[in-house]
Length: 187
Image (tube, rainbow, N blue to C red; front, side):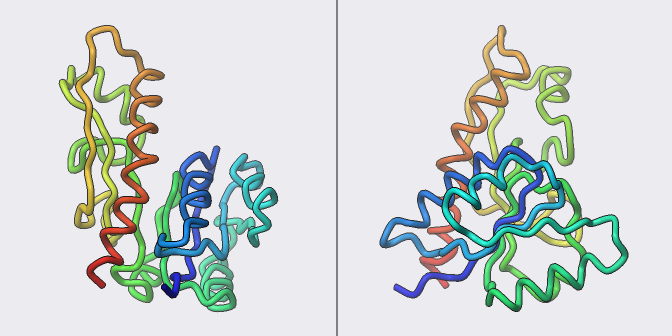
């Protein structure tokens, strides 16, 4: 199996990144994480890049030429697939066009419900019965690309935001790799 050179974009803790790195080291997993990009200089996830000796770049997305830096590095590392794992920046339409159907994101809700930020507080305020996560293709609209996989759980009466976050992350660690396998099984 020829693994697809993959870049993971992060902004924070990197727990999904760590999970993907571990899975990518399995013989039959279809991707190899060849690059990690962050828009947050203090992203804890950068520690996983160091630990697993994966090239890591901080790219300041406030600079006017940041998109060119991203594209140059994606080319340099021969990236053919991108995973957004807690990346808190909208991907430019130019990058989306170049990597059409090759960028996926994981979102902590059952899309199309609760696009964007503060999903857990909005779920509780809305008295939702179910929560979960969605892995979807990235397009020009926020959290609106075609869904690949969703996983859900029932919200308990006493669940707080931290409970929802923890339970959702547990599902994300299963859903993200399953979505990647599903994509490459049929490509």
